[in-house]
Length: 151
Image 1: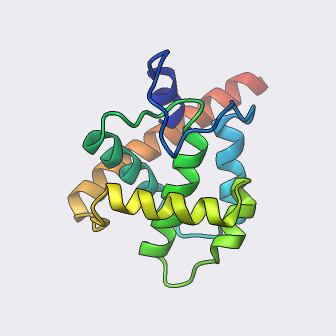
Image 2: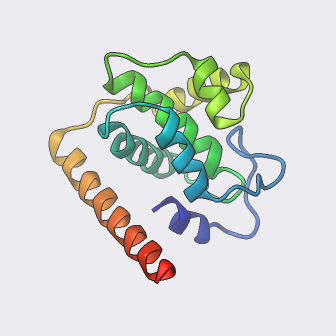
């Protein structure tokens, strides 16, 4: 879903705190796998992260998901989701290391992300279920592509 959002990004975009100066060279898929390997969070966090990113770009159309912003948006949304959803979570030092950021940078991104969402992190069950289905559909499509490429 995030890769698709990146492909829709305009050629010129307004830089935000979520934008990197240059392309990291790491695909969204590889970055997500890294998060999945080291975050140790509940599966609900992945759904919440996508939902939070979607909320953010709907509330603030000037923020775009692109190859320059997707990694920072994803790691930030995952941190916010883990802290909101899970009873046990890691420190930002741990998350920053996973995401390839400095701790102070991740702290600032997390704070700004929550401010831009007006600290509205609660998700109604129906909305969560809708996004859960989107995530499952995207995961199935990704698995099918991987299987086809391996064949």
